[in-house]
Image 1 (cartoon, rainbow, N blue to C red):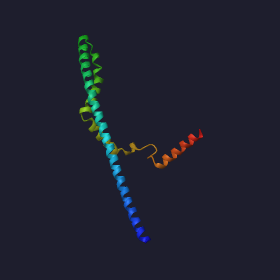
Image 2 (cartoon, rainbow, N blue to C red):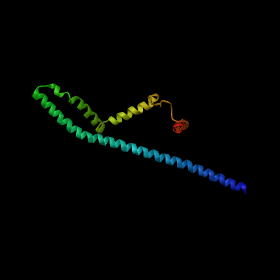
Image 3 (cartoon, rainbow, N blue to C red):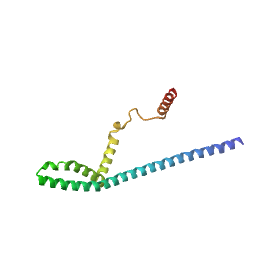
Length: 147
């Protein structure tokens, strides 16, 4: 009688363990999917912001360029055209971010760094572990108790 009961308990424990593993994997997959969805939304918001900023900045850049050019021609001072140079860099960057290939180039560069320059990505004291967190927590709780 005890053997039959023990056998069914072992079977139930095995089924429970398999269920827990499957549930953990499913939960992790959902979390990863959610994080990726949030990342995609943030990137979409950044691109949308850049495009919206480009509309206003493009208008400002156009008016400033026309005004500075006409002022330089009327006063015969080419130095009035100097502010157009930094403004054109900002305009070009925002256009490239909103409509160009800046994000693809950044993605390729990031992938290259991940593949070839792993040493630059390492944390200063190595990977954080549970033990190091517990040690830090104990030290901080001692510090609070000593006060």
